[in-house]
Image (cartoon, rainbow, N blue to C red; front, side, top):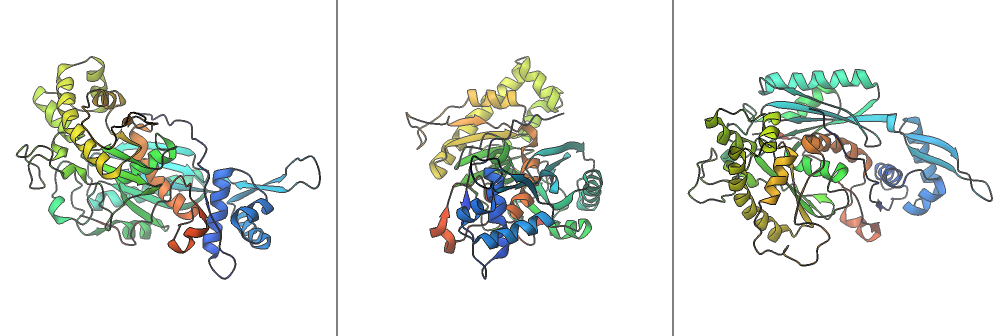
Length: 423
């Protein structure tokens, strides 16, 4: 089903000051690329002033980026007096990144160009989601897209359901991928593809997708509850995604919201995932002989079918509890709901939420307490494609630079672990 992406908002300008020669040329490249990405065309002198690098250092970086086809020389800008400066801009056709979102039942692929524009999206059903079947399929898909676009492939991002490397929460079931215990996904794929591969969980990637393309574009602090087969959480705090020590932050699906409730494959009873997830909805519809495919869910909601209304009422009650917890822990500007459920069902869930007291219960708010995401089913795949793009183009702020930085970044994702294995 085609996914409509809203127009890309202008990036919130941000830059980290450069480091003059003798420190970090790689950092300086990212500073220049980040400024051009956020501000549009700029001249050498403007870039030198904004980064506090020498004009010669900026000129050397620009020459290097031009040689790599990552920048465009736009010629001299018209001005009233004097010799107008030559303007440089990001070359959208200079490189691409590819994002792969893997779920239990399907694989979604997206391609972004260097300007962050969506150039391709597709989805295919999966009959076999085990690594020996899926890893070659991902490699073949990447090879095919490289042939189609012909541009330099900057990297590949892969997102999968978590948690990673947690034996107690990763028993194979309807919301997890079978056979991935101990598989070094990034290493195997990068060997086959020949470019760096980053692995992230789907909820974190979805938060990145909403930051770049959707409801999070103007926000610096928000929570995203992601409906996949299970349910997960992505958190953006001060423009940075919270990943946790091992990439497992946000595993809210196994927080108990109904003590003594429905048994969960993780060994507990009453987990959120058993009430608020695509899996929970399918379990609810199966006794009625209804398949929970996307078109059927849309039709049920459009017809106000009692079977879907009953599920929404129950799910909203448990979701309300979780949202209150998240508000008190993270104090977000808003909580975004997004993922694999139709927009109409997410809207209905929001309408049926019952808000209790929390730190978000303020009379004056710039944002609603809860809102729907804007990127639909493609949000995690967009986030996946953005991982290598921003790893290559956005300077990573370290504490030693903090005094000389101007923070207002749209997003600075932390790199994925060097060896990202799935359990």
